[in-house]
Structures are given as C-alpha cells and as structure tokens.
Figure 1 (cartoon, rainbow, N blue to C red):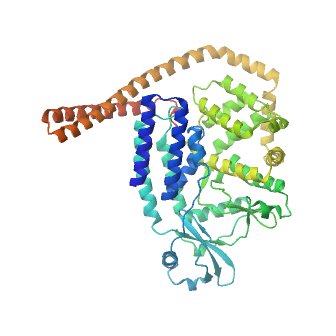
Figure 2: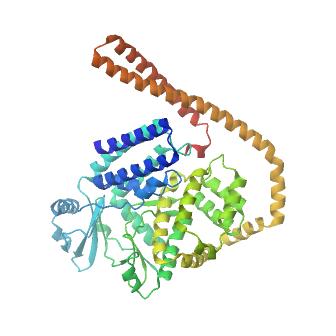
Length: 531
C-alpha cells in the first residue's frame, strides 16, 4: 500500500509542477514517459491488480499521452507460482478430503501462474486429463487491500488532478474494474461463463470450448477438460499446421466478430495464452474469468455504425457514434462526417506507401485533439478488440489483413437475416436525392438549434469555471494553512499557529462547500460529458 500510494503522489506532484511551471509540450511527453517507466517497474514488483490496471490503461490512447502508453502497452502477468503445500491445502479444503479421493494424480508444478489463479494438470480416476485452476492463497485479502489503496488514489485524482478531455469519471472506471475483478475472484461465475460460451458456439465446428466438471468445481477451484493447443503467436509451430495462417486469421475474426457486435458476453482477456489453435485448426478459447457484456441497445448502434460506414452514409455513422457515447456534445457533426470520409477514402494499395507506425501515432494525437472519448463501459471491449488485432497482425501481413476481414465480415452479415433489409435502407439514405431532402429539412431547424445549444453551453461552462476556480484557490489556501500550522508548531509561535488553524478551517470548509456545489452542478450536464 505504501509503495502504491507513494508512486501515485509523486506522479500527482510531477503533473502539478508541470502545470504551474508551464513547461513546453516536449517536456510533457518526457514526463509521461518517465511516469510510464515508474508505473511499469512498480507493476512488476507488486504484481496483482496493478498489472491488470496497466493493461486497461494501455488501451486508453484517447485519454493518456503516447509516452505513457508506450511504456505499459505490453504489460502481462509475471507472477511466480505459490508453494505446492499451500495450493494442496486449498484443494483439500475445497474438496473436503485428500486429493486421492478425486484424482489419480496431479503435477505439483503449475503449468500457468497469474495474479489470481494457478493452473495444474491432473488425471481423473478414469484416466481423463484435466486442467485444475486453483485460486492463489490469500488473494481475496490482497485484492481488497489493492482496491482500498486504489480508491484513495482515485478519490484524490478525481478532486485535485487536472484531467484530460474534460469530464473523465474515474469513479465509474473504478467501479467497472472492481466489478470485473470481483467476478474473476469467483470461479463459480467463471464456470457459468464457460457454459455460456459452450452454448453459444455449440454449432460452430471451428471452435473448441473445454468441457467443465461441475461436480468438482467450487468458488476457488475450477476443473476443466485438458485441451492441447498451440499459441497463435508461435510462428514456427503454426507454420507447420495444415491450415494456412490467413485462414486461421479469418476463423479467429469469425469467432470474435459476433462477440463484439451482437448482444451478450464477450471474452475480455483474449491474450495469446488464452486463444490457441488445435492441430486440426480449431480455435481454442480458454480462461473465461474476465468477460464483458454488450447490451442490445449498444449492439444495435454498433451494427448501424458498420452499416453507415459500408454505405458511406457518414451522417448516420456519426449519429451512431453519438448514441454510443464516443462523441462529446461539443463535437461538430459536419466536421466528424468529413473526417470519417477522409479516413475511409484510403485505398488498399495506398497502405503499402504509408508508415503504419507513424500513422497510428498520428491517429492517437488526432483522437486526443478531437472531442472523442471511449466510454467507460467499452474499456473491456476495446481491450478485447486490440488484443485480437495484435494476434491477427501476427498471422497475416498488412496486405492480407484486408482480404481476411472482408469474407469474415460478409459471413457475419449473411447470418444476420432481417438486418440485411436495414442495410438496404441505410444504402438508400446515402443516395443523393434522399440526402438532399434530409439536409434541407435539417437546415431549416439548424439556426435555432445552434443558438439554443450555444447559449446553454456558455452558461454551463461559465458556472463551472467559477466553481472550479474557487475550489482550486481554497485548496491552495488549505495547503498554505497546513504549512503554517507546521511552522507554528516547529517555532512554538502561537500567533502563527492560531492564524494558520483559522485559515485551514475556513478554507477547507469552503473547499468542501464548492466541491458539493460542483458535484451538484454536474448533475445538470449532458450525460456524455460526465462519463
């Protein structure tokens, strides 16, 4: 706890010092690079929750500087296994007796070890091999301490740190992380997730989900069918399979595309250790502890977004992005439409002439400059997407990737049934005649809408600035008062001590009052500005 708190407060002080001293942008990038190095080092030292937090932050290029993202983008669990005696004790307690009652044998060396659980290979009485996932000793209390510490840091950051891009709700992000990790700590929930995915892919020949032995499972132990597979990042072994890498990439996309675009749960942690390929070329999915869920409403808008982009109906695509919460209220829809049109005007042959790494960094900078933000509820979806994107790029070259995406997406569209009619409707809307009529009617309403929106936004922003400035000034007076109290005690000067106590009490009371006023004012802001 002390190491995590000290790291956080050093980072806060560095950010404040940069803001006060008004250093150039180059120093800002270097500062975040140093912060990233320190976060990375501390993550590997403390393991557990901090690594998972880093994995989530690494996909927030819309909020965090590139220097920080570069340092943490490949954070993975590197946790040494526990002593076998401790793990054996947990198994005995959960199964209510010696291991010999349930197993023929078990390897005492863990084949995988992460921050929450470890996996061992065992043999059932009937000779079937199984994978036994066991919760690490004392992990419940460790995670509880981590969350308590993280809640302190987030409270401080929420109240005192200048956050990028306006209104970032750290409390919502913390709540989301806590819910996911708490579900991951309950192996009974993971068993239910596994059964859900089994049912979802029961008719798919190209997907393998391990069977689960429910009678041997508890909240701390999960027993599954042992499935042999090859990591998709193991180029040498993958190249020896009969299935071509491009076909594997297409199968992988066909497995995850429905998870991202249809209502229901999706695999939120599909790293190379959890997504394998069998010798027959089947995609093997493992570890369903960390999952997310796409609501029916979000799935509808995601599909509308895809259809809008395909039909080049950019107004509809921007409208879908707005409903999903990716665009802040101040975003100009016309500008966003033109930007989408430019981004999607690239031809496949042009990609050969582009430095893709430089393009990606440029896009990150552009995203930070635009009124765009990834809503908190899509953090885990983004993590799933970016992880699979990395695996796909390992399987297929840039040229091949486009040829992989097209058939996979076409197959998914074919399975959508009635949605094809909505696709035709979107196509009709994109035609010149419809767009002319639509634009004319919208044009008649536009002047009054712009006046109303501008007036409301100006009033809200003016009120916010007043509250925020008072709050910052009172916080500075509170710090000054505490410094005076320390000076008064050290010098035994009663007048300084009394004045400082008075300043501290008055300014801290004022700070709490304006914090309350600011919080109350935020309720009247547009929902997307608060997320």
